[in-house]
Length: 356
Image 1: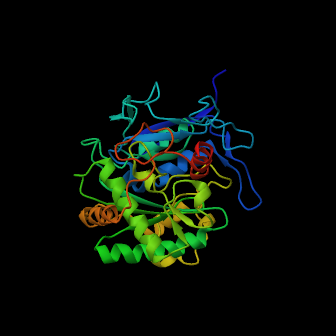
Image 2 (image 1 turned 60 degrees about the horizontal axis):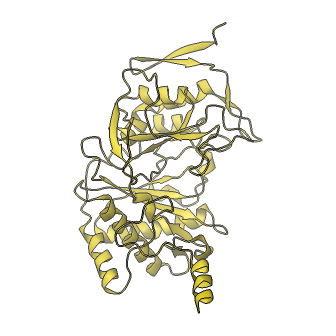
Image 3 (image 1 turned 120 degrees about the horizontal axis):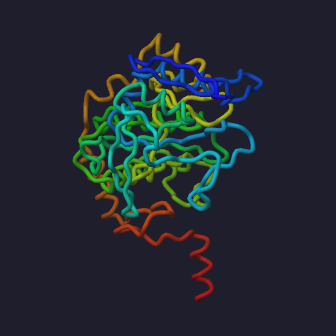
């Protein structure tokens, strides 16, 4: 017997939804359950807005085909077998309107990732279990030169969203000083993301250096409250500026992406003014469509200006002259040019002690 299905239309394209009643987000004390059809309908309702974040970008799919339930095993780099996983290659059987972009990973391997060109692509991806979209900061026409700087303000244990908001306020001031316009959004969890459109003429390494410089300046402006330390044992109760989110093949949940957390929270564009006092848990797949219908996409002007990275790269060079060099890459990366020794400080201290 064929499984039940239904069909919805997204901007003139029919999208088939199999098992529409499958529960994706179980009910919580404060939120009702959400089915697969609810998730697909959500992405259809914010189609134009999320397309602005994904348009012509190679995009990794974070898929939870069995739903966001307790006990779901997530695949990792160490153990790639799991019920929830990241899909970096276009799935077999994708409809003809799902286009691709060819990208190369730090390892030298390559892949054809999905490259959204119309709103129906997000709805189709939701039909195959995608919860979160992770676009690269590049366009298909030039996959080696990012057009986006991403500032990820990540609360460490002992801090919270309110602390990230305070740092975001200082980040706004720094951007103003540099003559750069940033576009903030909630992460969909505890953090704050700030996106800046840049001229696509710098490498991933350059953009990562710009993010390091930005983070270091925030550290100077907010000592003890902000860190760029890569090793968790060194961060303390601070907001971590995750500069490595700008390295090749590192991505952040897009604007309007759901997150695989109870209640179906959404990474939501906000104004600078409303950040203070905001409860990001209010933004869910149930509430965001009406917010977009009433206020439009708060990132609608993000492509109006593409900024130069020169001011930040000059700051990075000044830090280098003062003895502040490059910083560690993620552990799965090959050794990168100019990178310092990639060893935890505590482990390095033990090795040094043993050698003494």
